Image (tube, rainbow, N blue to C red; front, top):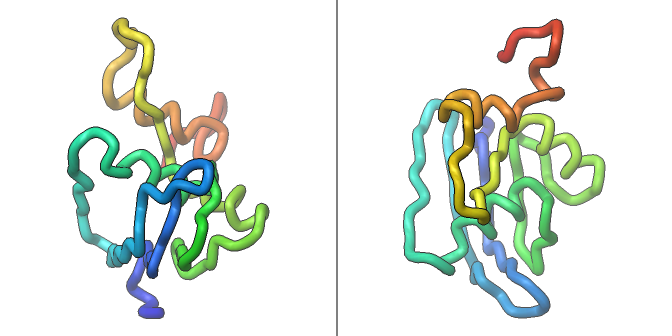
Length: 119
């Protein structure tokens, strides 16, 4: 794999209860690139992020983050310390924080805490 790749996904199949949502997905994100993921409800955007973070298991394919294969539970725990993730709110209401603060919540305890500033 190219050293400049931050995320490299090859032939990813993932979904829920033996029903694939993502079928043979390929994605390459290079260092410094900004990527937007768009699509209709149910297209697999959230599933993709959950598989990258190891929240749900892939059915097949390869995921490589920052040069590291996401195969073991240690790899998946490591990637969750590298990437902040704030899930969608499913209950109607207002979150009493700014967007920036909400994003930082996904990094709490991994890159900053009570005595450390966020990196």
